[in-house]
Length: 237
Image 1 (cartoon, rainbow, N blue to C red):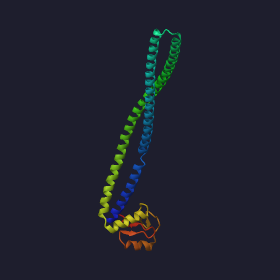
Image 2 (cartoon, rainbow, N blue to C red; image 1 turned 180 degrees about the vertical axis):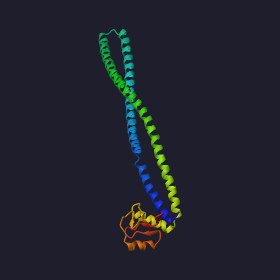
Image 3 (cartoon, rainbow, N blue to C red; image 1 turned 45 degrees about the horizontal axis):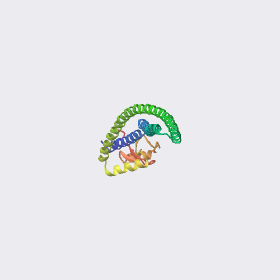
Image 4 (cartoon, helix red, strand yellow; image 1 turned 90 degrees about the vertical axis):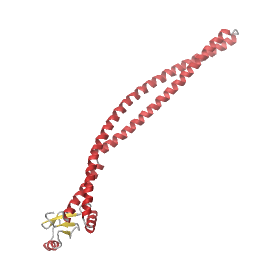
């Protein structure tokens, strides 16, 4: 390959690499996957919160049930004492104590019923959320695998182009490569243009006849007098 052909292919590869990297970075599947992962994290947070609420209710219910058993034991002991008491005042005092214990048991029973009802509602909600999370996880995994396949295909192509680009760059002389890189930096990626008649392909500024004659004496590769890009005059290239 001539230097002119290498320069043109090098530019084509650089532009393709730029497009490929942008396509990969802006891949719709990646954005959608990121959004889905954010939604998944939110679901997990909700699930953990509900699990914590369930644990709190279970602990409260266990404490109430323990209190209920202890209070029932107190009632049993008080009733046993009632069989032995003969003094009216002591019996009256015990009856008041039993009445208070009965009220406490009623309150515990009411609270227990209320807490168990709330726990049942939250447990049902947790079960539904768990089922949805499981379904969401499978969907997320499938999307991740699909996105990985698309991204891997793009990255493979980018890597192949990068290797070809490095090979071409290495085949150019150091001065020519430096001139190309500088022109590429200055002109935002369009470092090289070709001459069709008297019109350069990039800047489109028609050259005078004198300019064309002057450029023709410089060989296949020159510099555009208008935009400063590398100008390829080899029509075959």
